[in-house]
Image 1 (cartoon, rainbow, N blue to C red):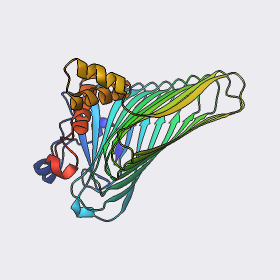
Image 2: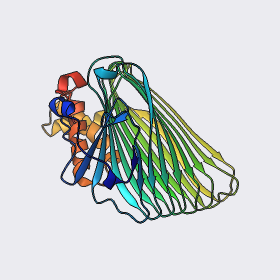
Image 3: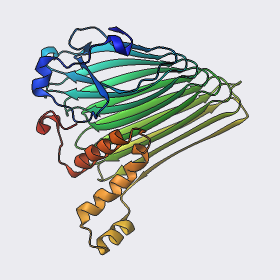
Image 4: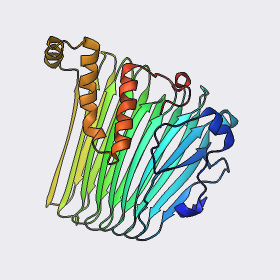
Length: 338
């Protein structure tokens, strides 16, 4: 399905209304369903174009669901194009409706023309048997600004591969990510951020909270070509390990061929601060709640990057529920946990 926002129909198919209710949207949100890779159950891929100088007044939420109607492995592609000087905010959500071993391959293309501004929030919430890999191909022209925040709440194997090209001067890209893993869950975030012209800026901050035997991989490359002077590029990846069996691997990389560049990267793996826990407990806070407060404080730096205040508060609520163990699996949350 191709077209501007005004040409699309925003109504969940009747069957989904009976079994799914997403509580993330707030007033002023349009909701569009991708059912087993097809828009509103039509089978057609999603291609959205924002006209030049158009400013989206409403948040667009695209809810991608896997259902028993299509239990086989699927592959689909979606695209978002922001015309010159346009702006908009997109919320992309992914869910699974049963415990089938769904395998999903998704490709998302995002292009920002000159002076366009786009704000994406990605919420991933699938069950333990789901395997979902998404490849993002992002192109940002001169003066374009992209902010993208990943919130991975749940999933068996979740893989995000993000390739960004800053191809016009004064282009900016900010990538933030928070992932919560437990059991045998695995998450991978592979980032390749290409500075192709001078005077561009990029920032990356990815954080993970890992429990039990879960694992995470962060592989981040910043590449600055020879003529991309006046580049500013920053990258950070931090993990909080809640058990001795949790595993996290960070592979930050800088590949710089210009000499007038400001760039840094860093990575840490750590555990809950025992001194802070002792302080909180000495103030009458129970151990379980003290541990939760530390984890929420760790997550807050990423959440603060979500510009929509109502959405940010709702994401914080979901993360608190997840960390408290109030939902540990999509099957156990009545299909309306988010």
